[in-house]
Length: 194
Image (cartoon, rainbow, N blue to C red):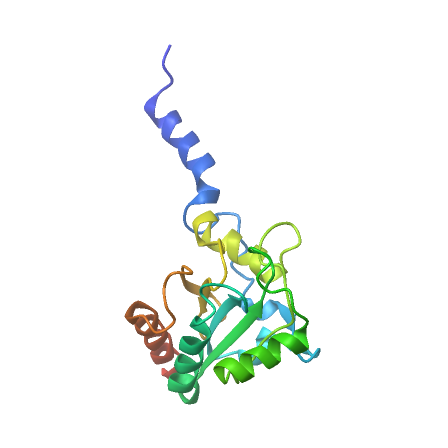
């Protein structure tokens, strides 16, 4: 006997749910502001420091074919920071061992080679069981496809601390779809509170 079609689709939705779209079990009360990183200088860096701002959070690496994206990240930071954008780099050695240096080496590399002056965190895991809690939350919120699969994966956090979009490694920080999304969120941030 063949199971009813409705049962088939219910089972499909149940098993596919974690791999598509927002996770149904995710706690909507949680926001990016509930997570704390450590700055590359070793100080606590709570995301709540950026409340009301738009954050482009990117896992970075110094020895990757995509490392020149630091230039684009710096350009986006310079273009939008006065309007309320924060670019936050999260160095990670998770993909190809392409961020092997210490925090001091990473910071010097970014400053000398790309004039980076946007905030950087300490080195973090961004995938797997050891992933920073923010990255585990983001994966639960947005699903498997939105997890970092390589260096320079980008998350966009709205002014309310919610994840609003993500961009794959191959999408440059200066791509029109990234800047349009940033501008949309900056417009939201500028709206008067109701």
